[in-house]
Length: 441
Ligand code: LLP
Image 1 (cartoon, rainbow, N blue to C red):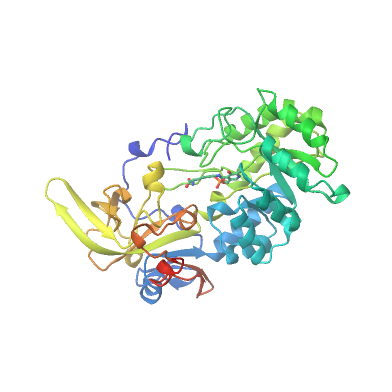
Image 2 (image 1 turned 180 degrees about the vertical axis):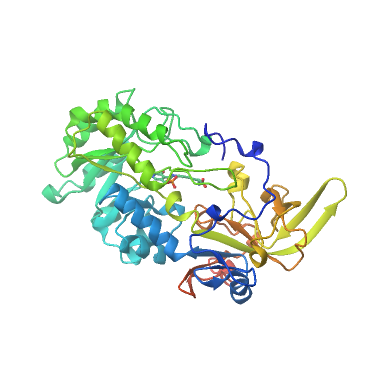
């Protein structure tokens, strides 16, 4: 995704021929004496040999560090947006580190509850929550429901009819009319959006009145989310400015600015830290005259998990078309990382066996799926001696990779492994051929 003002569009960043940039790797990444890269003290090539490829590898210490940073920067109430990457181990980790969890479907709610996260640490999202999803959220006693539509208010009215003072605490999702500088598919703050209640149209004001008229529902705050992969903290300050005029007269205690903080994917990009993001939002709240007692929260997804994760593939075929291009095919592709196809997202690639090596050879890394659009890294640079059989890594795949993975072409989904202190634990096992037919009638 490209476009942020101070970050040049990806097509204008010259692909980097130097060794992979340390800032794109998990925090614990370290090359051994033999030049081989280890993460969490675990050698990546050895891990690929043992567990197979493609493989999602997460640095557990990195995940924990980001969760702790979020809690320190935002305080209690900051939620991990589970859509970025969710399995029971991740849900437990974020909960153990003090984060709430944002779930946006009955499925995400289920995984969080199975992981043992208490309902009152969950925030229930969704622009089309079914009556069943709302019922399950209420049954679980979720900490917050973020109300998104008038139809949802109607459903809540029925479901909370007899709730009395035990009814849910809810936030009202509004669209503040902010156009964040990011890909249009992940831009959500503008008035023309399927999400939430518009401020300009008066819908948000009407929704407040309707929620306040429901005896079984407690309106405690306002929520907005302007988009994802945002590099400019100023966009969030603009969001606060746009919200405060609506928010202040309501005399509510909570304002959630959503998620959306961007991360660097390729050399040359840089993103604000979670702490810088929080500072900028808090400053904007102060400047806008928000009462100091208001709880200001956020729900980062990508910024928690993206850089903690990388994908290991094995190179299977190399096709050189003289004078044109070299295609390097790996054993995964758009089924484990659809982001290049969906958003034209750029990635870097490197060889874990030689992480400090220069990468002078220009190749296009592609997957094994039956379409030409199945590109993993369109303009990749790899070491000159990269060959068939090599383990190749793409860093910064921890967010929206596994969570958006599919079985296209009946390719089994990869395993996910957490590494720390020299040990690896499989937190999601690799799918087998059996899994590919287990739902067939
Ligand atoms: N809160 C709400 C209400 C959201 O809709 C989202 C993301 C987040 C928080 C977390 O946003 P984050 O901090 O991760 O940017 N599949 C796309 C990203 C879609 C984001 C959807 N909503 C991608 O791969 O870039």
